[in-house]
Amino acid sequence: DYSLTEADPEVRSIIDKEKERQFKSLELIASENFTSRAVMEAVGSCLTNKYSEGLPGKRYYGGNEYIDELETLCQQRALAAFQVDGKKWGVNVQPLSGSPANFEVYTAILKPHDRIMGLDLPHGGHLSHGFMTPKRRVSGTSIYFESMPYRLDESTGIVDYNMLEKTAILFRPKLIIAGASAYPRDFDYSRMRKIADAVGAFLMMDMAHISGLVAASVVADPFEYCDIVTTTTHKSLRGPRGGMIFFKKDPVLGVDLESAINNAVFPGLQGGPHNHTIGGLAVCLKHAQSPEFKAYQNQVVSNCRALASRLIELGYKLVSGGSDNHLVLVDLRPLGIDGARAEKILDLASITLNKNSVPGDKSALVPGGIRIGSPAMSTRGFTEKEFVAVADFIHEGVQITLEAKKLVTGSKLQDFMKFVAAPDFYLMDKVSD
Ligand code: PLP
View 1: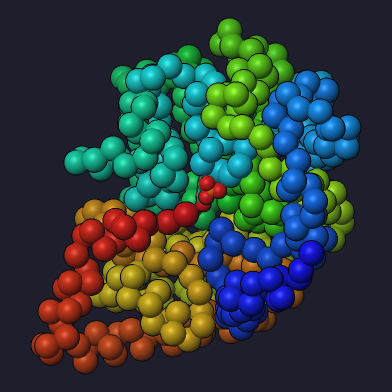
View 2: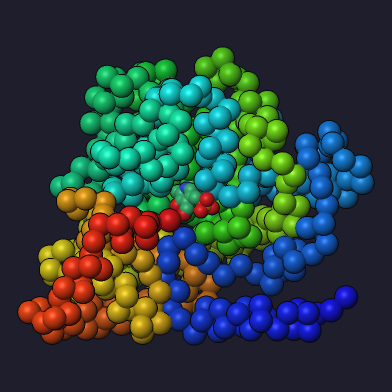
């Protein structure tokens, strides 16, 4: 029984380097966070050794007395953390991550080739909501289901609900998906509910990015209007990497969501749950009910507002003109540079954020913006004042990117830059997560 340092110095050293990178850089990726030591202890525990296919009390393996206790506790805490009534809602805490959770929902309630509508990826949606290009069905969701994404109103940067309604009436989707990876505003769930009802569709919210904000009630409550709510557990919620699916207990459109979703998770798409993750998630969900967690989420939002205001002061154009949540999307096209180059230059200065497409980009392949999130650095104790300084650092990085562009223009390096900007480079590198 050796320690990691003794058993494998190579992996130990990689982990040490990554730890140093995480702690030395300004971590501004909107989907990342620093989870607690307590969560990491649970994730690194003996829970990883156990097989427990099935649900508490109904397992396909022996020896699950304590795992049953753990998963039941995790489920109860999940319902309590999101203040949902356990008589009306159930939850499955086994999804291995956000994309599997979404696919499990589709498997539960759709037949192959049924129609779905989610926010288009170049407009802030997630791959797993049905992304496809005119040439290629990129995501499994668009391979197995017929996807007609809805989009933002490019003049406002807000979801074009009127167009969603018109298209839904023509397209007749079976499922409408709210939620995004790069959308700085709240969704209008009540409007989406009306549209879903008008066409007989299920309404699902993928709250992966904002689940911490939802738990702390600092953004609108998707549970009020949706039939199903999915989430990752490692973004603003600040837990281990994983996923959850919440479902209404009463049948919706004639479907018993509870058994359909539980069966889609196992045996539909997964085998044994990752009990170490469920352990870490239970710890995270206990914390999510504390006053400190609520204060943290309030800080996330107000830090993001401070960042947005400073960027606007510095002359930047923000998609939708600001932010109501944990992220801002900066449109760099008015400056004549793209997000990929800004991301690379900022990376050299240990400022970690990501390039992101912005509405109006000619294609999803050349992202014109950057996405900046406040959850991780808020965990590190940053307040509004530090986020104003962060905006100034980013501004400096953008100025350097502009200088670099000037130097490169007309030089031999320009050919190289063209190579870097080849569409496949961006596609391989994915647009956002
Ligand atoms: N849903 C949304 C809205 C996301 O932003 C993401 C990931 O970033 C996911 C789902 C997928 O989560 P995972 O990467 O855990 O599969």
